[in-house]
Amino acid sequence: MFTIENTGSAEQTINKSRFYAWTTCCHSESEVGNALRQIATPHQSASHLAYAFRIKSKDGIIPRFSDAGEPSGTAGKPILQMLEGRDLINVCVAVIRYYGGINLGTGGLARAYSSTARMALEASKIMPFIEMQELKLTIQYNRMDELTRTLMLLKGKVLDKTFDSAVHVKISLPVTETSAFISRFN
Image 1: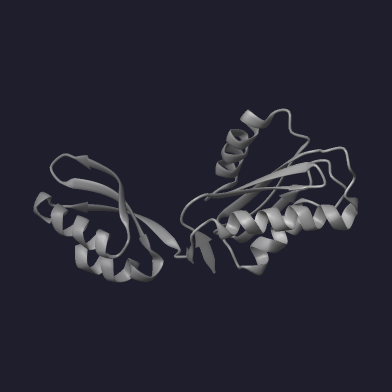
Image 2: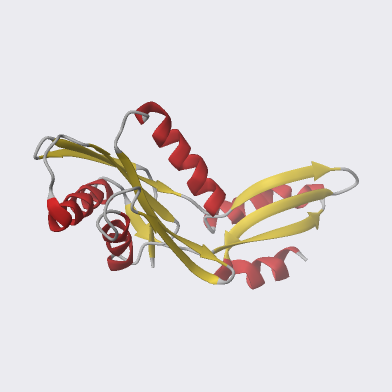
């Protein structure tokens, strides 16, 4: 499985219709909704905003797509097939279409949405997907620097920390490193 590290975008014109695509990393359906609202706001006069995403949840992979008023299966589904074909996880791709007055037909629409999504994905940095786990730990003050260094080496991060007689930290680290990390800091 793979994901993207940064957002990507692309645009192309096909038979006077303009297509704009964006990729973004999202970890939940609410993050997808926020991303789509940010994309849609400056493009309120667009004809269509089709999208697809695949999110990893505790219940498995959640795939969703929307054709946004285009004929069924001609917009969102080709975008989703791009994500599935590249085995991408926690990625949303949105494609906006400004209708140019010339009908593209169902095959032409599917190719246009698919190729614009592909171009945006190619503009993104694709990397292996690392499943992360959140943990809450309580440690002594003198171990905080060690914890921070260890997390940095493991590509984890401190999400939250509170201080009283000890340090209470909420961290995120790769699932594969969890048991060794817990035994080191318990």
